[in-house]
Image (cartoon, rainbow, N blue to C red; front, side, top):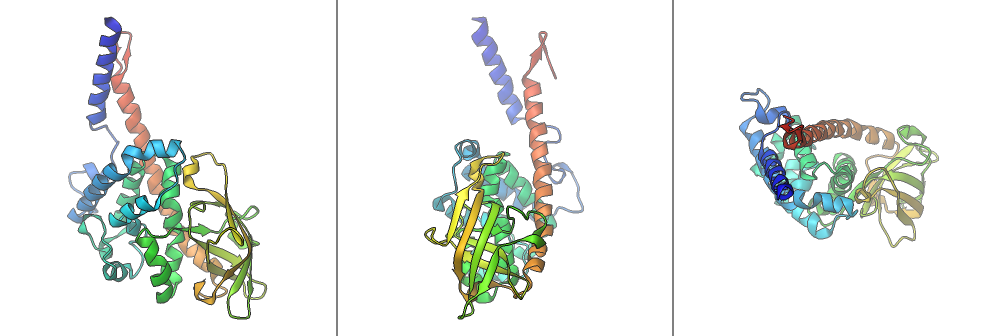
Length: 327
């Protein structure tokens, strides 16, 4: 009949549109014939990333986002083996030696020393495509780790990095950043969570952190605290059985797959070895993270907008109005 034939025609046109290259759907680095910014290494990196994420993540992203599926250890391991977790911090100073020491490879066979701002741009663009534009999923699977791990690599001792950062890079552990509080969001200097020194050189952490991305699945919490006499301090607090550190889910405007949490600390003990950087430098170390965070968000937002343009064009190409194609 007429209806099935019309449906088949629309489906055929949708499929054709799906496989077509949409105007402005791709970032400029992919369609410019010549560019002074993108080398063969950049293009090879993008191709390897896109191929990996198209297999391991994108086909499932919408379902996982809708069903609030939190990341599993098995998925973390696959992402780590594909070099995706290492890409989150590949621009950190000295990271290349650490990756080579533990045989952790980046996509496309590139070296960390080649990971410039355009590599970062490509990575965050492709990550947004890989999660199929699902912001909650992207934040929960990658966002928390991408901001929780850099302070440890920047300011941690070599022993700390080996013991705590390497397992994260290998997909064996997860980390997040715990800065914001119910009464101190962007105004970081006003935090109230306290760290009290103990006789053995450790710390007892008490307070509350809010809107902590990835907190529901994190093993380690990179936590900014205030001390009574020495200013701010940054500590690596480890998850326990809920007795002294308790994350609870927070409802937000995007998917619970983000693992957004309210984290309460009840005299959580932190041994001396898990002090990140220097006592009194916690605020400064937090600020050192912000430039990269903002760059990552700008790139992701721009790529998300292109995904919207792409979907709109596909839909418009499939539409018939008054017996004629809309486009």
